[in-house]
Image (tube, rainbow, N blue to C red; front, side, top):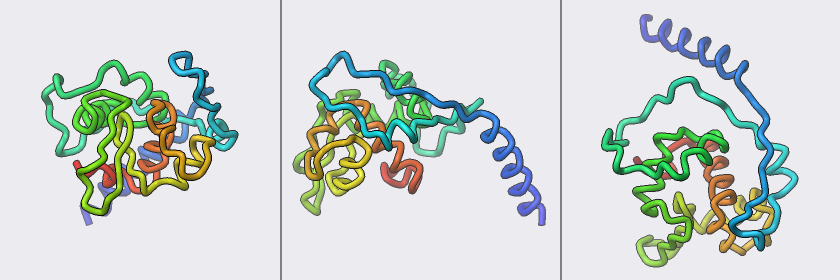
Length: 164
């Protein structure tokens, strides 16, 4: 019974807190790579981020602050991703390199690309979120596209996509 009451209280506080903190954010152009096509209308329409007052860092994320990508933390926040957690994921997956490309480590032959190493199996989601042609996974080397797909994955399965 205590667990039920505790879960109810946490849920209620979360609904009240999150419901009042949704903010719309406009996606600025990427001056570092002007050749990247603009993101889709659906992406811009869904570009609402949650601003969390305090991030609860999950088990598996080390306290060692040298294992982070502070140069990308503003972008993680902009996309509504848990900043400390994704700062660590980016360090672990790509060592903060948005051009990182894992061509060989996956047993099923898939590849991982970009800052948070989005898997090539997400080809349809990538096309939709990044307004790219289906099958063009090179767009995942663009940080904004990579994080748009990461946001979709996080909203649809949480951190299980990154195996913390």
